[in-house]
Each structure stands twice: as C-alpha cells, then as structure tokens.
Image 1 (cartoon, helix red, strand yellow):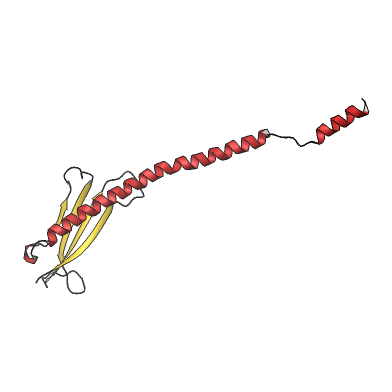
Image 2 (cartoon, helix red, strand yellow):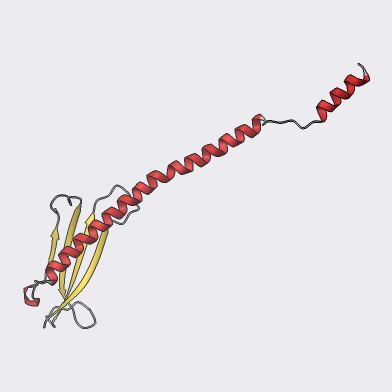
Amino acid sequence: MSNKSTRKLLKKRSEPLTGFTLIEILFTITFLFVGLLALLQAFPTALGLEKINQMKSQAVLLAQEKMEFISSKAYQDVAVEDVLEDVLPSPFQLFSRRVKVTYVDADLQTTGSDLGLKKIEVTVSWKTALPFAPKDLKISGLIASK
C-alpha cells in the first residue's frame, strides 16, 4: 500500500461514526413502549374514578331530596321510624335509601322520650363493581319542635 492510501484509510477511521446502534434503538423502543403502556393505563383508571364520582353525586342528591322532604314537614308529622326503601324508581335502580328518625337529647344522645328534638339520618347505598369504592353515603340533620 502506498503512503498516500494509508493516510486516507487512517483519516477515514478517525472520523466519528454517525447513526444509532442497535442497542440504542432497542432501548428507545422499550422506553417508549413502557411510557405508552403507563399512559394507556391511565384511561381505564380515569373512567373508573369518573363513575365513582357520578355515583356519589347521585347518592348526595337522593339523600338531600329525602332530607328536604322530611324537614319540610311539621315536627309532629315526622314519625320516629327506621324505613328502608330498597327499590328506588328509574334511573336510580342501583340505589337504596334508609331513613332513620330518632328522639335525641341536647347532647345528641338517643333517648326514648320526646324532648323536642329529632335526629334524621339518611343513608344512601349503591351497588358497584369496584371493590375499593365507597358504597354508601350518610347525611344527618336535626328537627326541633317550635
């Protein structure tokens, strides 16, 4: 080989190589795949949480509706009772509602006699396929004789 061709060959080898290696490409594809899987996992989770919040909102409305209905009555018309509404009308078939009215004293302790104060507890329960979601909601209120 001539001196000139040897220098040309050495010059070519000393230049940096351009492009990507197979390992770099595989690492990048793996990294993008893992990121894409994490992103796709977020969608079902978000849909599940949205459904939980929808059920809670409907339960709050059902509880408030019953509480307002009872509170609108006169004190003497509110019966001391424990009533379970197992089947609610459409579109609330997944819900049940329990209303418990008890006599309470000034310390809100249950008592057997009428001291002019009644405690109203409305509990709304629902059926769900998600095991970690709360399945009931409870609101309480007081009604006093005038």
